[in-house]
Image (cartoon, rainbow, N blue to C red; front, side, top):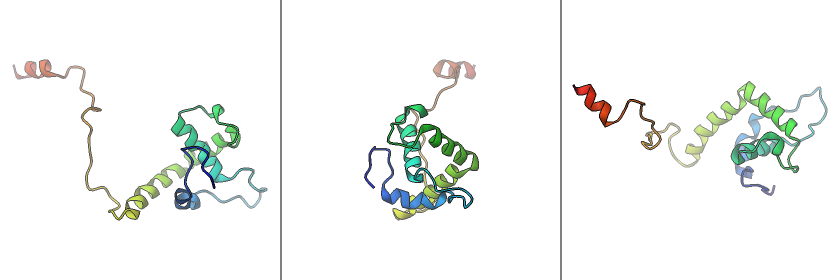
Amino acid sequence: MDKKYPSDMSDKEWEIIKDEFPRRKKTGGPRRYEIREVVNAVFYTSRGGCSWPMLPNDFPPWKSVYGYFREWKTSGLWQRIHEKLRQEVPEQAGRHQEPSAGIIDSQSVKPTEKGGPKAMMQAKK
């Protein structure tokens, strides 16, 4: 499958998560849209920051994509995929599943409103 957008999954990425998605129901007809294309559309909106109605026309209709997204979110599927990737990706790179260290970026930590040197000096009095 050719990637149309930078947010599209590679074949290797799809192989890791494809079995997590529910199979087609036996009572219904064939699926109208390939699940991989639906997932690519979800990733497109997420990575591109566009609203659902702004999905390009080469994806399935936005209402269908959003319906799948909402169903998968409610069922916990996205969380299960996240956990699977969190475990498998480090393993494939030859690292331990659980991180051995964490980083806190001091530039993103917000001080309190009453923080700073002035507040610290007052506290010592």
